[in-house]
Length: 335
Image 1 (tube, rainbow, N blue to C red):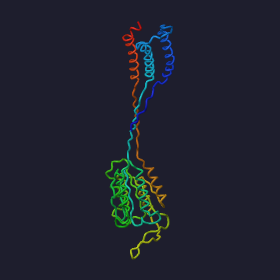
Image 2: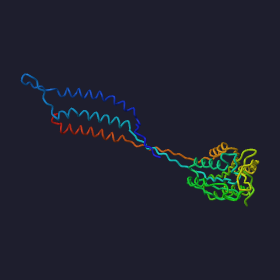
Image 3: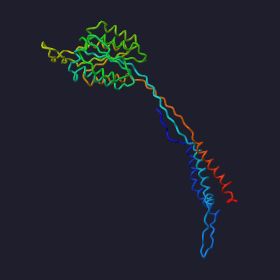
Image 4: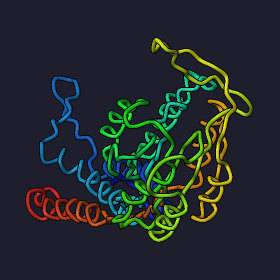
């Protein structure tokens, strides 16, 4: 970003000399009147002033050139300068993969409107607040898959986020698969900081990669994992289908494998959070946002340009013009 700073003066105290300009004007005016007296010619009993020639008028105006030269010299001594300010901003983003549980239990109504929609809304706001990071999305249930590889094109990611719904894959909770797939997305990352945010509301009960193996994979690639357990304490209304395929809600105990989620976070240098409602879930993401900040380096450069030579040239031009007029065109009057 470039910004042009208006004129400044290195030595503005020289402008006090301009207080002499009124005295110079008075002195030149007084000198002119004493040098060019008025000539009166009597005619028919009256007095007729002799008309003033162009040369005389020009000679009377010559002191103005000297005063202009004086003003230009004072301005040159004050050293007028203009500055060009440049700001260079370098950002070092973070590579992040969101690993989201989309199992049937994520439709529980202890969040508004349910756990999955609440998680999607908060995660999408998180993405919007991190424009300098590459972010990807993995979803898991009974198995896992990549919904969006890590990308800087957040609009594409947000559009894919909207398409997420429960039932996209076989139901279940494969935490190990969700973590391992997310880690695979960061395997080739060149970023100095690699982060996974894994959110689930249950206990690992499916998948061919167990969570402890997935932890070792994440540690191998230098990935920090933040885990979030979603669900209120006690009972929560879960969706259940009757014999006719109609869905109704029934209260069941909330079961989250918090010891496992804490271990995943602890082993990889991250943190575990428990979200029991929409507000606390939003707070969790805000905390993670503060913990994982993109590095921004700002360098300021200032370049100054001197302009005193312009006013020095104008002063010389005024004095030269005054000298030439005195020695040529106005010489006959002065002699």
